[in-house]
Image (cartoon, rainbow, N blue to C red; front, side, top):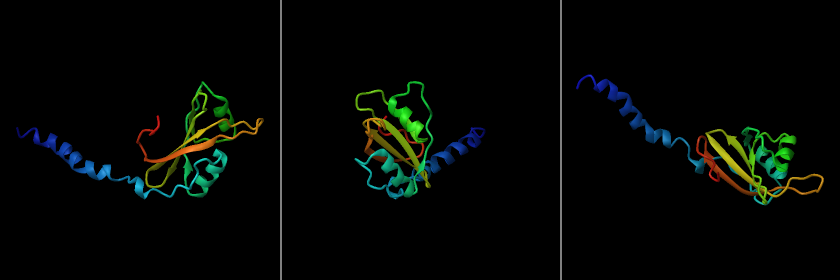
Length: 135
């Protein structure tokens, strides 16, 4: 029995620290998110960058939609993906000090030739490491 005690100590320490670790990120204390809903994504992005949010690089996909090509062509590294659906939803991610992630969704076509702009439909703050709340 005495041989198992040293093995239990790390587990007990981890359990004791778990609540403190879980509380490390409080989305209520995240940096302010500017009002960006319904703005063209390009304008919303500028407001987020000015507000201290930083692009969180995504990963290019092989099944590129026209929106994904347009956003990646404009250098928007925070693009996570675009869905190949009629409403052309795209997801972007930004980070802020303190372990915060801002997930932004846009809808509509980003097409300079047609003079159409994707607009922001939602913005949700989460903690770093949490899954995308809309995925």
